[in-house]
Image 1 (cartoon, rainbow, N blue to C red):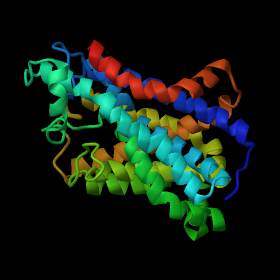
Image 2: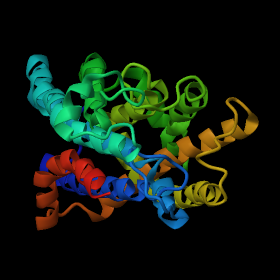
Image 3: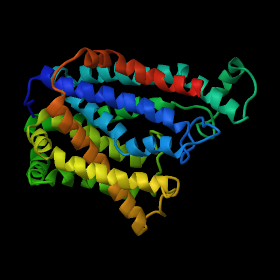
Length: 336
């Protein structure tokens, strides 16, 4: 697999999309405080359906988009490093911040949550020894929003042999088949099939809890996005397909997401997801999965078309985005 554009030129739109996605995550987490369809870490006494729609809008695709962009970065990291250097960089950039952040940034959040729920009425210092009492949500030990770093570290390790194989033989038959499938008008939506299958099959067995050892429905969605990001960085065909089809796919993304938001507004979703494996369940998760991929395609297409120029804002996001992600949720929980 070889890059088809200059590395620096391509990084601009990736950085822009990553910065925008992280800003949207912040907005979604603020909205979660007022979301009438979901019980977040803390919740306001008064809820707002209009604000809750922000979460409904972004839920299918914002974290998969961030994971896709992480896969894009993995290609460049592996191009410049051997396996040992790559794993060392992953430990320093992902595993270590997730561990340190879980010990420093998460205990205040859990403490405030327990105080709000009336489960603990003493000082934060008195609470600290209890942070290690059991696994959240029944216990206190958690990584909260830092689950993404732990998941990404695990995917980086698991995918390493596959990535090296794809680098050696340009992806092999599997990617050549996917490339042929995607070139027809609208054909890029066929790449949502893995997302459709995993969401329909696994959600009923493993509802999303952001637990590394049991969150299999979420793993499958994010891991596929991570693989697609690697392919996007290293191959010509996926970028070409996105460039020619993103406008039509954007129309589908808007229409499908509008259906999901109407369902949320009328109280059908997400609090009452249909019973597992019923026809409505299969229809809901199929629409959810296709919307997730459609938004990824549309936003990458917009980025490749309009966000190829570097700017001061993009450079600031490149420098501050990671730290902002680490700190944003403790601030929201504290203020909320």
